[in-house]
Image (cartoon, helix red, strand yellow):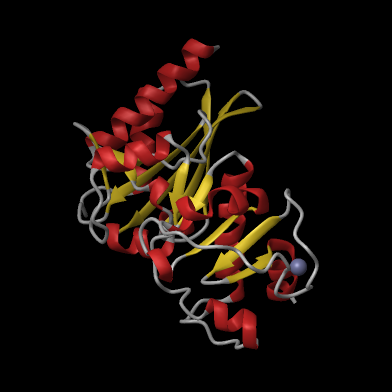
Length: 257
Ligand SMILES: [Zn+2]
């Protein structure tokens, strides 16, 4: 079974990479999930053609279920009889669009990809080195890359609703992603955007590692949530932007309503 699976994976992987695609190394993915960014400039191939080719190359017992959620995103489920053995996400967009529109790509831990020859990183907008990023991933550190959350402390303090074109849904998505990472033992820091940044961490990690998270020496004076005013417990998941700390749950319920 494992052999069948890995040979299927191999065939799928080789076929995509032959067509000038990138295998995006999203950190959250399990072994049976793969993400490909199809090189948009290569007009001569379509996603459907690539999948047809894979089908020909693979054992006939394997079935695909192609779910096209939009013109730019396909989800392909690979079945062995009734079991889903692989999920393949395929993005059909330019790199720039991909970086601008896919939530996971707002975080530095997801910038790695494989092409046919190398492992490398999407560096179109960000000035990272491969070693630097590998190091951060190895140490389970990650950060937010954009500066479109600059009004968020004002939103919290004064309940301003306008936020640089971000919808509440966008913000919830970003926070949900960050939450899954910190629950997996990661630390979110202000590595790339420094003071412009926002982070989500367990309260105990802010207490113990605030200087590491913020890359400067500061003291936390206020141990109460800016929304509900309750004292933070060590295991509370807490959002921070500038000097403001708020429960994740408190922001979530406010954004959701
Ligand atoms: Zn609160």
